[in-house]
Length: 385
Length: 197
Image 1 (cartoon, helix red, strand yellow):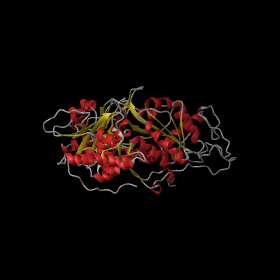
Image 2: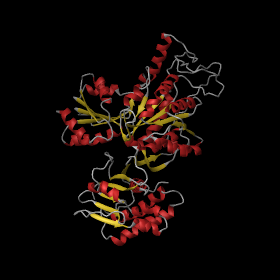
Image 3: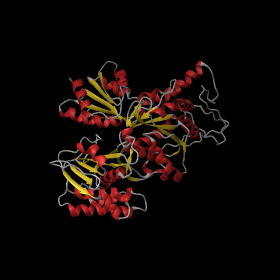
Image 4: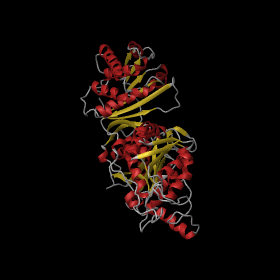
């Protein structure tokens, strides 16, 4: 369906990434946000809190991040599109209820504007250290989808995609921004509402008597019934059967968790998204994401001007990881160069998938600044020789 | 003019440094068909201490969002000058609040002073000092067409204050025209894009 024009601020604007993310959420149909302020993410909710009263949306500043995530999960079960917004320290506090959202198959979006960590770290400065936390932060086996914008324009566009993916796959979708993109102001073009596709909640057409909240009817993703529509059902974080009732045995648990994981792994080909250039003759491939991918392109241009055959792959969706493509490239290139603002997280993933077929060269920075493009060029040169 | 211009704007918190940067960036990106990336410094600044915004303006996509050494340094406080004055390029352009900043002359650099606070006071509102400075900047650099800047001022200031701010802008622009004969940076170009709705 098309976006509700009320939430779409059509036009060309000069916005920072945080505000663009807030506008993307409203364009996507988000009408409930609960959060607790934290630098560098607060501008997202400031924008939403200002605009929501005109859209019939609800913003609640909660007492902390645990409660924020819990409110987002609860509100999603009324059929509303929901989101919370935070940065590293708050993201850590949300992990328990992110697991709850995964287990209850609750569509929602969690925005993390990454700053330097661990702990309170660098509140006002850039980091990309929450990449693995977004994937593995809550306990147990589950899968997430995570997107990484590299500009305010993408903060708008990809927030809409994040909401749509949350609806299709019924899970918490991680929106991994970083301080640089969040606090960077650039031109953002917001299209007309009828040019924006939004996924509605996939409501069941069964009667309350026939409906079970985790019936999958031969597919992988259950149908949804809104609380308050007369469907009486049970949903918690315990391992459950099709009716949502707890079942404490290994068989049910194995089937349930395999389905949670399978709905993403089996559909990875349609979820994975990346951009690449210069692969035809590449002997070295730079793999990067978010703000680092932008800076890395300068290094790629410089290396090419020195005659090095270097390709460039930017992860737009970072989880699920584009295993198939990296494996394919590993068979034809000599090395991967992986710059990221952490001490080596996606580099490990590249190395795992390359499985010894190509060498992985990390280019790391713990946070507080973006890479100096020359530092990346230097490693590209080493990797090529 | 080179294809990329780097600008730092600094002053004390409360002077409207970030708004000044936003207006210049918006004029370039929305009303003059260029790429303009603004970064605001996010130190723990409180009102009254040094505050800064940087802009990279380019004919092509800006990949590296931070500036290396500014081509233009707009400074509205002595503390801002102390903190960032050294980084201005050898042939850079200094634009300063002449009652608050007393720069040392550097050979090769061009310097343009304006009593922007006093000019704002003459309009009855000191708060528009930053917009007077933006007008003066427009006149001395001729980096962005006047009309693109006016459109950005109109769209960036609080509703109901547009006229006052445009008056402040014109005050600064007029002061630049009277005191400066040669543009400091480049030649004004036509507006490439329609003003957004």
